[in-house]
Structure formats: structure tokens, C-alpha cells
Image 1 (cartoon, rainbow, N blue to C red):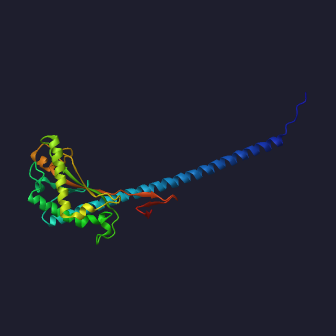
Image 2 (image 1 turned 180 degrees about the vertical axis):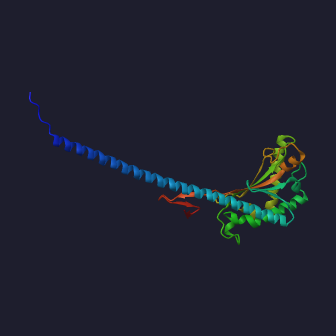
Image 3 (image 1 turned 90 degrees about the vertical axis):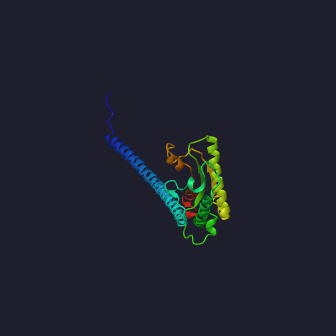
Length: 251
């Protein structure tokens, strides 16, 4: 039987066409891959920039809080009232010996003077860093960060009954707040950006010592009133077009 001759030219043409088609497809896939890679790289870069901006904002807010604490401490020191500040945790600390007698929650005469001095210092510094106060305060300048809350916190040592310590710590914070509000009622009226009162109070009993309760001196340091400042966190809002605003300003 005779064999049919192969059409080598046609086979060669079909092979070349197949090779070209495969090459075009691979080039197209590579092009799409590059486009997708560029898209994800751009999004990653945007996310990184936003994260850096947020971290920088938080650091800046912490620096603002430190300035608030330093200003209040200086104002009180100028009036002869020695207080401590914990910049890392945003706390102004008043030891028991300044305010109260042992196991009592009524302010001593010296304690009343100290709290009045505290109220005066707060009334000078705090309004510039609150939503309601900044609208009426004079000489605030360009304030970027605001205070979310100011907690008046009562603390005791570990001696005695837990229930009594809870009550004692809360009563001390309540009395401190009452004298602050009496000395300067405007402080009680200050509001944050959520239209909530800035100042609030709490009692922790022995639960948050600053020193181990193993010596008389350490216990003395644990018996205290802390004024804790909490700054507002950045508020980012999407505009729906890919842009982000922080507190109403386009980022």
C-alpha cells in the first residue's frame, strides 16, 4: 500500500501558529500579573502611609498629654503643692498625706487647699483641650489633640477589709471631685467630642498598687488619688472616593 506524503509546510505553519498563540497568551498573563502586582503594591503603600500617620498622631497626642501634665504640675508647684506625674501612664498623683487622714475620706484643711489649687490649675489648662472649652477659652493657640476623659481615681493599701477599702477609695475620689466642682463649676461642664462629661471618678481599693504592699513606705505610696488623663484617639472617616479625613481634615 502506498503511503500518503506528509504536508510538511502545513505542519510547520500550524506549529508556528500554535507557538505564537501560546507566546501571546503567556505575555498577556504576564502583563496582567504585573498590573495586579502594581495594584497591590500601591494599596500596600497607601495602607503603610496611613498606619504611619496614625502612629505619628498617637505619639503626638501622648506628647500633648505630657505637656498638660507638666503645665498642671508647674501651676501647683508654684502654689506650694508638691505632686508627682507619671508621663507614661498620663497620671497626676496626689499622695494621701496631702489630702486625707489615715482611713478617712474627708479632706483635711490642707487637702481642701490642695484640691482648690488643683481645680485652679485644671481650669487654666484643661479647657483648651476639650470640645466645649476650646470654643470659649482664650489663648489656646493651635490645639490638635483633645482630652477624652479625666478620671479621679481613689486607691488604698492592702491593709484591712476589701469592702471597706473599695468604699474608702471611692469616697475619697467622690469628695475630691465634689471639691473640684465646687471650686470651679465650669470644669464639671466640660465636654468631649461625644458631648460627654470630661471628668468622672472611680475607686480601685487595693487593686492597682504602684508598689508592693510589703513596707510601711510602700503602703503609704499606694494610698493616693490619681488624676488620669485619656486623650481622644484619631477619628478617621472614609469619604467614599478613596480619600480619608481625620477630624474633618483631608489626609
